[in-house]
Length: 94
Image 1: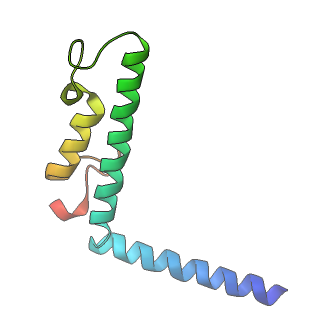
Image 2: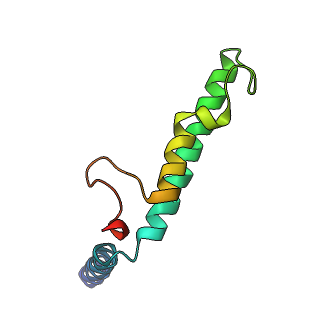
């Protein structure tokens, strides 16, 4: 049983090192970009549903382009805008 814990710990450590190296070299930037776009589009969809629940109608009271989540998603997709708050954007832009 202790051998299992050692093997699992080694595998987790190797995966962590590999992911860290891939992040530091910028190889994960396309993945992070896609995750950011998906997150912000989901945020925009939630905003639209909230506005619709308040009685607003799309096309009359608001447009999908005006939603904060859609603006953030297009920023991330266009020029690698900030996905998180701490690092200031993705590494490919460096």
